[in-house]
Image (cartoon, rainbow, N blue to C red; front, side, top):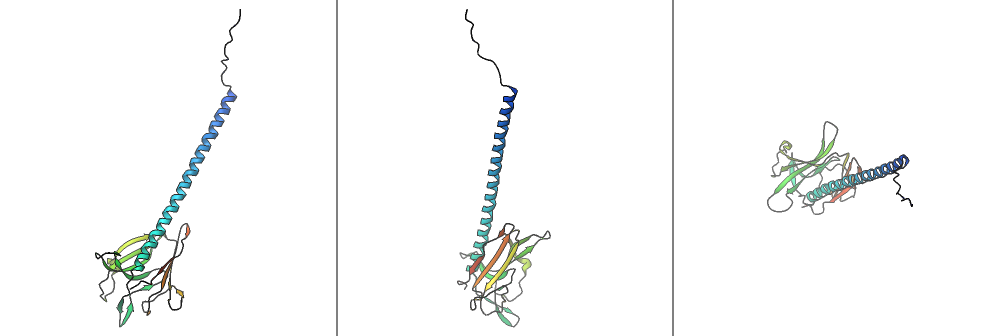
Length: 203
């Protein structure tokens, strides 16, 4: 009589199971490592996008305000001086708010670094309605907004249109306004490209 051949019922050996588990663990590790790289890349990209947006917002805001700057004068004691002055830390000038339309009016803008007790520095903007009165400005009544948080470096420069020289002090007593304004900013990730604004359309 012929004997029937039964299929082998031998299972996996312990060594084969260990090899399979090791391969599975390696694949899972590689997958999680890949997810981590993707996550870190997306986080870096998001930080870069946020930083670029901050640069654009600051540049556009300053550009609009300097583009609509008004050539006005004010009384300082017995003298008549231009309503513009600047230092290495910021500037004061007059421009409309909003920039377009008839709903707004002229405001005196002051942009300065705002220092916090913990050492952080923000770029702060203050605005007061301009009525042409020779009285001293009461900045306690000003509208205040933070234009940029956590500034590491902030330097303002003003170009003399006659000599082409850049200076960091522009007194209101000068006969003319600066031809250009340059602002150098750095955040925790490094220097920004220099922001340069021409005042050719000032009126």
